[in-house]
Image (cartoon, rainbow, N blue to C red; front, side, top):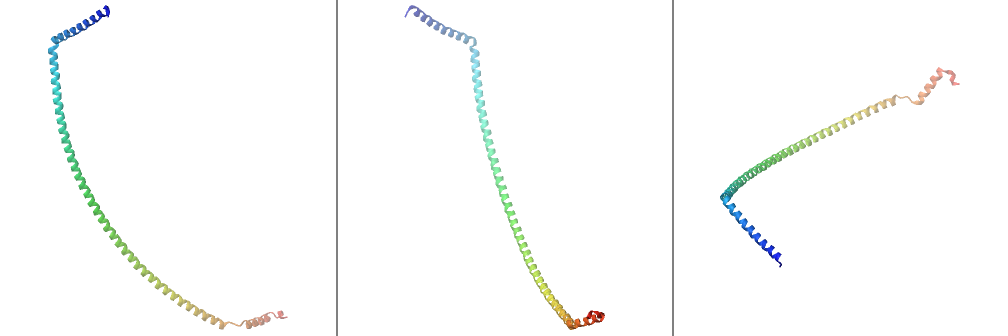
Length: 188
């Protein structure tokens, strides 16, 4: 190493030592001037940190108690609502069963009424059919009687007409004779 390098490294070592000594001196002066205040501030910060930690722990405990209380309340409300729901469900089931029974009874009554109406209609239909058949038979026999009477009368009239009718040849000769009498010139 040459001399210049040696002297600059000594200068750097001294400068670093001087800087360290000066920093220590500045720290001592600061400690003398602001030491009590710094210690008070540090104590206040420590006290504040302790107070905040205690308050935070108290809040956590209080929140935990409130959460537990809320959880208990919610569970009890859920249980109450569950029992109400079960009661409501049971009530609705009973109402549905009751309505089902009423509907079944109504259906039975309607079926019975329909059966009665069908029986009544059958009976009425049979009676009407019998009446119509009897009237038809009566009408048919009355019609047969009237047809028979009309035939008898027609036969009687025909017989009268047959006996009262003049023979065609006799009638023709009579008319010729009458025509000759009326017009004697036509005979020639």
